[in-house]
Amino acid sequence: MNRAEFLRIMGAGAAAAAMSNFTSVSQAMESLQQKKKQNNGLIEELSSTLESQEAVVDKPITAIVIGAGARGRTYASYSEHFSKSLKIVGVADINKERKLHLKNKYNLSDEHCFNDWSEVFSIPKFADAVIIATPDNLHYHPCLKALEAGYDVLLEKPVAQSVKECTDILKYAKKYNRIVGICHVLRYAPYFMAMKKVLDAGMIGDIVSIQHMECIRFHHMAHSYVRGNWKSARETTPIVIAKSCHDMDMMRWLVNKPCKSLSSYGGLTLFKRENAPAGSTERCLDCAVEAECPYSAKRIYLKDRRYLYVFDIPDNERNDKKYASLIMDKLRTTDYGRCVFRCNNDQCDHFVTSMEFEGNITGAFSMEAFTATGGRLTCIMGTKGWLKGDMKKFEVTDFLTNKHSVWNQDISSLPGYEGHAGGDFGIVKDFVLAVANQDASYLTSSIDLSIESHVMGFEAEHSRVLKKRIEL
Ligand SMILES: NC(=O)c1ccc[n+]([C@@H]2O[C@H](COP(=O)([O-])OP(=O)(O)OC[C@H]3O[C@@H](n4cnc5c(N)ncnc54)[C@H](O)[C@@H]3O)[C@@H](O)[C@H]2O)c1
Image 1: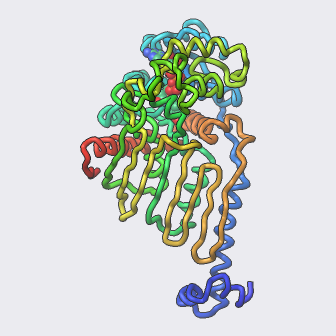
Image 2: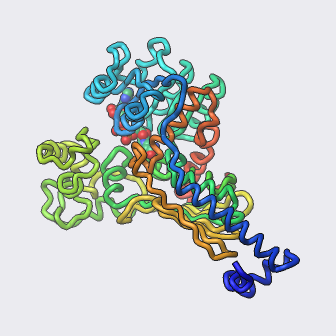
């Protein structure tokens, strides 16, 4: 780079400002070049190195799956790819077919296959760890029992249904000196891991503010939070915990400072009985206006063949015509066939929170049901640059050099990469390492490190309901 180039890149004003700390143009140019090299190096390195998902350990750790539904099966399937890291040795599920499925898949003995979760703890400890992937209202008691019995725990989010229950789990983990890994899986996705490294390296200077938007996607909202398992905030947790605890956690983690206060707004606007179109009926199969409804169950499950794992239809067979009658039957008999305007649901379909983190860092979070694509959009404003990303790639712009650096690594070669952008297997890897080495610091989402963001979520809901700013 010559002097003219330096001045062109910097612009006259910026060059003068940059020069003020240096005794000569050449010294300033050298410093700029060094900075560019450093920053280029980091993004290039992060974009070119794809860490293996394999946990290298002396012998596989053993685990029992409690709740053999979608999440339990996902974590268990890690052992199929990395049999030297993890071995599944037991299962508990009140759904007999799911229990049997795992029994056969992992060749489990009869005495280690249970119905209710509590039965696991009726016999002496027979594994290193338990994976708790039961519904939200069945995390707390199984987790306490597992810790008492001496198991390390991989615990699905949400940790529990109240701040008190979350802190009880933390206390038990300390009391029994056990590892509890919380499935804040996004922390283990290569995309967010790279973003965190870029921020920690100071590539955008000091963080001044963060904007983070969770796009749920209109049919996902209808499936999970209107018709499905999480439609009732009371029976599960409010959506800002049930869905967005990942995002509260991500904001807290990226900013790396505690949240001091917050204020929320939001509500349920669309999915209510009073908005049911004329001519609509209790179930989509009988509905005269179903063809005009983007949320039609016929459209989502039968035509587009989405979310069929809830009917235990294997993902690789979901387009098979042979399942049409099974799907029709489910739409006639389960909540997945109900009209979205008549589901007795209460979760918000839009939710925003403004936050103030320590150091006067501001945060804006937005959870939106009415989006065409899913995923997260993040913008982080720093004193020396900004970062913006869409979960596929992120771009960093350096204010001084106007250089854009892009992380856009292809992760499709990773086994299980579809699950939360690689985070599902990423967390199992670190959990295995933590258990094998009896060292919770392998996990970035141990209970100690991730409980704070759950408190943020619970308080965000209080703020919305009470319509007031909350100090944390
Ligand atoms: N980390 C994430 O990103 C993520 C994503 C989706 C869901 N989740 C959470 O994971 C958990 C499980 O969700 P899922 O989608 O796998 O649900 P699911 O309904 O597919 O699975 C839950 C399983 O638990 C079983 N179960 C219910 N009661 C039981 C009992 N008493 N004893 C033993 N088993 C019992 C059910 O039969 C079912 O098979 C939920 O808490 C959910 O919020 C986390």
